[in-house]
Image 1 (cartoon, rainbow, N blue to C red):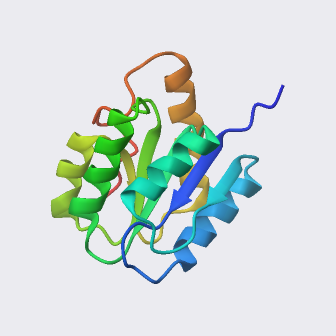
Image 2 (spheres, rainbow, N blue to C red):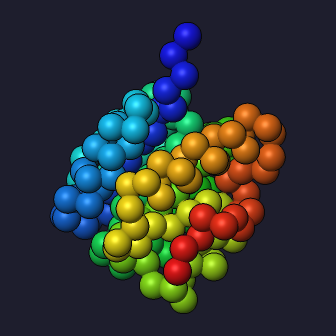
Length: 149
């Protein structure tokens, strides 16, 4: 049996910069997970379809364009409507501190800003996965200690 987690890394919206998303995808792949990178400029609907098609455990959303307050909640809403509310959503990129609590309340479980180490991301994935297995609330805006400043 394959115990690797399936993780989708996506770039929603019109943002054309994906170096960070590729670094995250590689780090999580190197940590032993199955990682699918969707590429640039994906719509919320395309991202959710990929999550469903790939039977993903996690969804990482990279945002550098400033559209995170619209796109990330929209994706979470579509996940819930598609009965995928158990997928653990995390975000990364340039997300101002003032916007984070609203994203957490909508279901984002962690936000990784510039300077986050691959070790921190791997620890988050491992810990969040164990919590999911233990049937603790996930994907419902529960604040965790993975919400870094």
